Length: 77
Image (cartoon, rainbow, N blue to C red):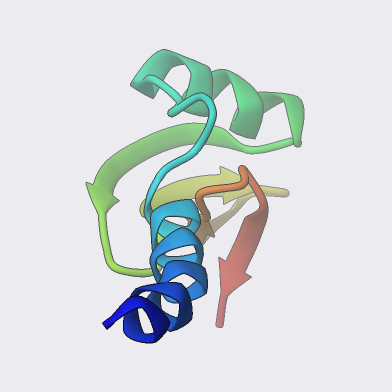
């Protein structure tokens, strides 16, 4: 039984790290981060399995973004 618990510990730690962050961003912080990165008209903010999905504008074009739990911004194709 002890071996099972030891083997499950790394899995639990990895899972806990994936779903929690030291500081979850508020909506205002998210918008400010995206604006600082050159995006405007930030809207349609939704939580997804991949992170926070957002519609915004950059260089006059509408883009879809995902901001992950580490705050990394990724444009969707």
